[in-house]
Length: 353
Ligand SMILES: [Zn+2]
Ligand SMILES: [Zn+2]
Image (tube, helix red, strand yellow):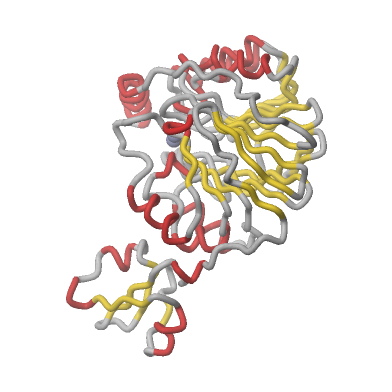
């Protein structure tokens, strides 16, 4: 059954695979004193992120198979002759399809992944290519930290086994350079987000790469509140068949006052930081208005809405299942948490508003 599911998944992914745009290297912006560059590559409907610090490189995912050559070219255009780490967040083809041409085309020192019970064409071919190229394979574990240049990345998830839910099994990493933090979540959904929260992990970050291409399954209110990013990035294809990013995600970022940068709108996006300042450039747009310096005021997360249930007396984040399934006549809306508590409502134990 699992085999059939995997094969079907591969087929569906192949049918819906959007073709790669011809992203070229955006080096227009002065790289100045940047110690870490984070490139969110425009690979259409998929994910591929290149991290660069002091001439050491890390690649997280590589988009679909037909994007692999473009991703490889981008890495080479950045002057890399090897990748210190290559990370496959999870076995879906829109993340790992393009990694095979990369591992066959450039020296890769270490391959970080989470083993998965998956036998799709792209996954088995990737593992074989990694083996054939004698790349050291590392099984990702929460709390593992890897350094490159003057930056480092720490694995935050997955925290449990999701045998048939590859998205929630995504490797999630926090990338830090000085005081600037990037949270890169693969396709992790709410379950994984809640696990990270329940573990008491420090999740605050300056840039959040929203999970699952901006799907409403990810970037839950509770998670977003803890991360409180100054900028959100979504990697997706123009007019993709999934409707990514979903309007719920776009709306909650807007409510928070967090700018959303999208590869489908601007092409490849690059973030630059010296550890204190943060700025962006993009292939097809001027993002120079988006800057952040450590100490700048963060967004007020109390703007994220709450819904109380007149019947049960609980109140929820508006994206909690408990709020979604509530009868219209039982709903009472609160602008902030204090109002809900003052009105005698109890926080939902699930979404923990
Ligand atoms: Zn996925
Ligand atoms: Zn995906």
